Image (tube, rainbow, N blue to C red):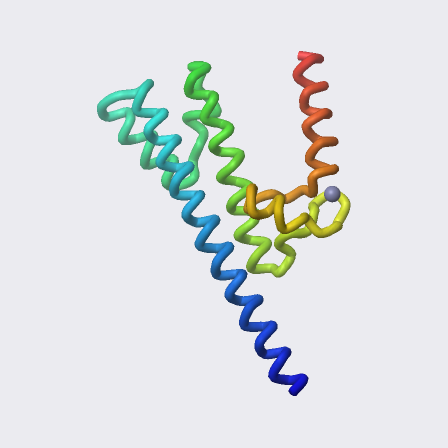
Length: 138
Ligand SMILES: [Zn+2]
């Protein structure tokens, strides 16, 4: 009896993993597509193709180095993609859903809204405040 229950738990655990992975990969695709269409507004022709290929390869240096403020906004997309990759790695490791900072579990509701969240609400708020502070200093 006990053993059966365990197997069932493991099944639902791997189902959850698969579901999360699909969700994250879908989100990843969506963000990459958004980034590309943004780029299309600022760059045309041959260069656009070059940039798109670079993004597919995960090379964002064009965006990072760009002096065009509109293009630099795409760094947000990059950050999100990095978080998604991080979350995917965590799923593999079995550490998904655990806050990077304090090690407590991130609530299921939060993960539903932001499946790539790597911090719990409290730690995220702390970080956001810190970032605001940095920007003010600027
Ligand atoms: Zn935390």
